[in-house]
Image 1 (spheres, one colour):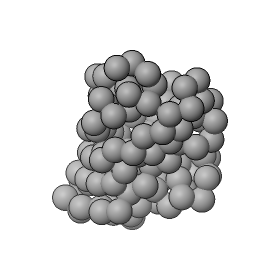
Image 2 (cartoon, one colour; image 1 turned 90 degrees about the vertical axis):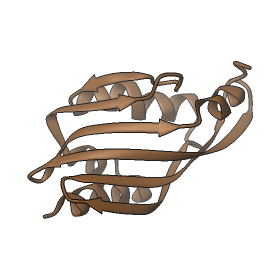
Image 3 (cartoon, helix red, strand yellow; image 1 turned 135 degrees about the vertical axis):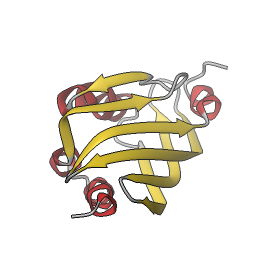
Length: 131
């Protein structure tokens, strides 16, 4: 399985709403970084920490409306880049957002060992009524 295939399987699982499949490709010591200014900002180590601090939190705060839709996947060998959009409606304010996103994945063997997110945090903050 190539790095591209590993990352694509994560996004395919995301599209199906398959959390187990999304987490299955993560190495036990994956370093997952959500960028500063994003609601889940920080670096989380391991699939459990990613689930608790990112996926579960976004699911709760956005009432199931949060979506990550990737429309371009760039194969760079052991590094794969996904480009797409985030969208959702923040439950506390009822405000929606849509913003562009880039994900940079590092893969070793058949597991993701690193993930870094880049997005327009201001658009997300506006929906959360921060500005």
